[in-house]
Image (cartoon, rainbow, N blue to C red; front, side):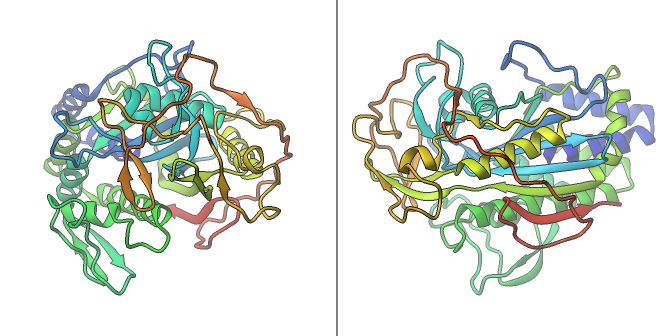
Length: 413
């Protein structure tokens, strides 16, 4: 939802002075970076239609990384914005999903099997977008990526946010990332940028692991957005735009040509529904720990997203993910053995770029010996599934559903 933050900020600025508007478009022009991810460039925003955004938080924590954009995509959230229904959705994508990477044909990792978050490390935002497109069977219109310093600066620019640490211990990531020494004590507190980053990144001590972390990431994004909507001074908005301009990249053009169209999404950004694409734990022969999605859950997720974008729903699953049924020959609940022999085609890999593969709570980089040749990586599952009917989301709810939603709808003023 970082794009919601940026759009809301620009919209608010346009209410004030022309000088502020000029400042906003000038700052945001620094963030623009485009590339090809499909045969046809999207014009959804120009026509004020429903559109999708892949939001990526880039893990730049290692001191050995020389670029502010080098690393894995620590979080990936598929966002849809629908001006007709006046709703926005956020679907968190589990980083450890086993998938076939999709990318330009000249990328050696195109066609390799790996974890979803390795797509960014292997080919940047372009490969990440192409891989998620084939995972979800959609065309992604736009992307936004922000690095960790960007999140820190953004939270500080809005004056901090209030979060609740529901654990009985302080949240910290100092053991794994010593450059971040901030902590968040148990209970409700107003936190600064570094504390918000720590709150959003901790996963090793969370009983829910990466799923728990993704919930907190969505919470931080939504609370930052609420703070932005409550601001009432040009200087505050300028701080926000300055914070994101040096730490964000996007292919959404914000200029005098696009502002009129962007205004049409104002109401849709006020109501946000969150979801989670989940997988089943599996340990493969390389010793790595992966998430394997089930056919019915993935197809349900695909059709929900397609519906939000005004696309026709499908009855046959088409995905580049390795699905549970293809690994184990049965649907979830019929097999209790979540181990699989991937002899000869280990999905994890390493090369001189040191891509990370997470296994058992620690970072490892086992050798990849699988097929890395360029190929059509989108495959149809052999398990056709008819999706369950989609219920209309309530205005406010807070319960976990089997369909992958964390049940949270946030209505902003």
